[in-house]
Image (cartoon, rainbow, N blue to C red; front, side, top):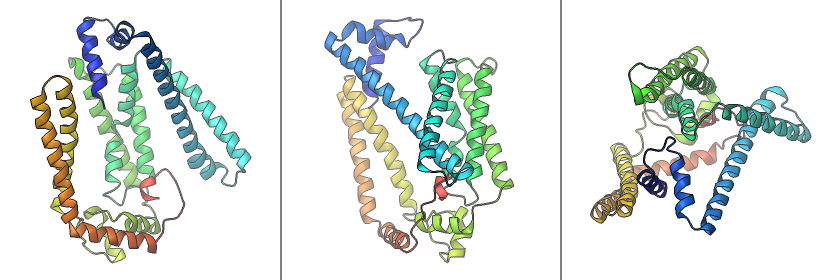
Length: 313
């Protein structure tokens, strides 16, 4: 998927070296090389992508504010008409805030680095919530808030880490991850866990493995059930990484005129996919686990509650 963009980037770098703003390279390639009909088509595609992205995130953000904040904490019994008004108001507020943030951005790259920085500190809590029963809604909320504040502070102060040069951004990511991790761990330990009913329902649906859920597993009578697949799951994980990256590199090798490398990477990708398929078919323990999980979900259907901690709702 990314290789068409990468190839255009190569063309722009070779055709227009030394641009003061490297982001102009893509536009110049489009203007100088594409025939007129394709220029209009690409411009329409840009407009469609821009508009769909804006509308998606405005609706997405408004739905969070209305369903998870307004209906949950402000007016749980709000009428449909009030909900529609709240949605429109939330959409307008988000649009104004977005325009305010946009006015401070000077390039597309700066926008991407800001987004990556905002999400840098939340990755650990989003992963550990599947492996540790103590992670709750406040863990995730505090992680998102701490990551947001830390990223904004570093961005506003120029992310100056001395003579690190181009590594300033990498150091800012590490600082964001460190600060956010300390904050959400402290909040997790200072706040109460989810209710036993919520934890039990989540465990029956997902059956997470590892020692982090042993307390819940023992209470429900599952004991020390091994993680389905055991070591084979790690093999499948490594094979999956090899398959995906090899497929990407194979496409790039063919497009850049290296068919031998393309065939090599393609062979690794196909072999990795076949290995995963073979392991999944031969893993009787995993098949039995899936059957048990289906029976448990039928016996203990999830409720319709929703909230910020989707992993345990």
